[in-house]
Amino acid sequence: MTGMEIFRFPLERLLLLIVASLVIFAAMNLLPGDPASVMLGLDASPESVAALHHQLGLEASLPARYAHWINAFLHGDLGRSYIYDVPVSSLIAERLQSSLPLILLAMLLSLGAGIPLGVMAASNRGTLFDTGLMGTVQLFKSIPDFWLAMMMTFLFSLTLHWLPSSGFPGWREGILPALRALTLPAIALAIPQAAITARFMRSSLIETLSQDFIRTARAQGYSRSGVLWRIALPNALIPVLTLAGIQLPVLVTGTIIVESVFSLPGCGKLLLEAVNQRDIPVVQNLVMLIVTAVMILNVLMTALVRWLDPRLGTES
Image (cartoon, rainbow, N blue to C red; front, top):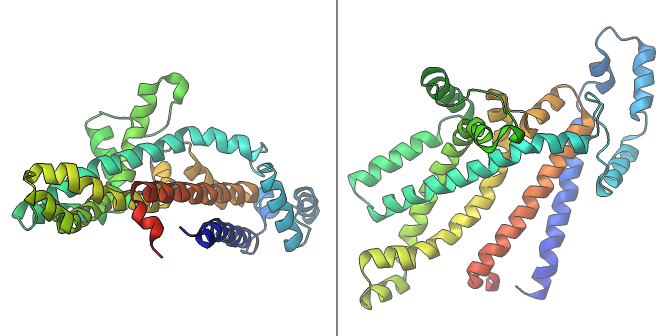
């Protein structure tokens, strides 16, 4: 990368964060509905609503409220939840105990299933096995998360009684019970992304196998399996890592549906509840933290991909 590109890279991310903060603030503060009225109910008196407005600082202008929010966010002050009346930071930290392992487990399952399936399809390109496998993958890709979650609950929990259908016991109850509670949600979250990974892995590996250096390796006496596993696969995995960075926001948003279906006390369910109850501090700060975390992880993933393939850093 040139010096100008190194400077522009973080600058672009900073501008994106600013735009994201403006969109988040506008979405919560310009939509119809009054948070104070939602909190107090329909029978609340105008005096009570006005008093709560003053207590929550909702009387200030929108620019003043935005500036106060951003200044507090940058100083690590996420405010207090309107509904739970606890610091937002402690509320999010508590819910991350289930959401973060769920996302990580879903990512591992997605890569662990998608990569081998893509390799098998690419190594049998054009055969009936390839066609059937990719057809099945496409079928799973099109299944909605909520429907898949409900069907898995019916089969593995209510019918076979292999795994719990809802709830999260917490890590204090032991690693095994916690992982059992996260298994079905993680699989439901991972299956559509594993299907995408499999198709992408197949395309990447087929393209890699057509490169000149693969023909050179074959001419040097490498076996078919040696070319596939030792030379082609490591090169084909680099674009898949880029895809993993793109899939991360999809997994994060998918937790909103999955956690609701499986009654997991995670950040996704918290966000849905906060939106319904107009809990502005929770929604604004949680979404902003998610955007920031995803952006940081994408930057780290980009750096990892460029380190694995230095040629990408020299492209204009």
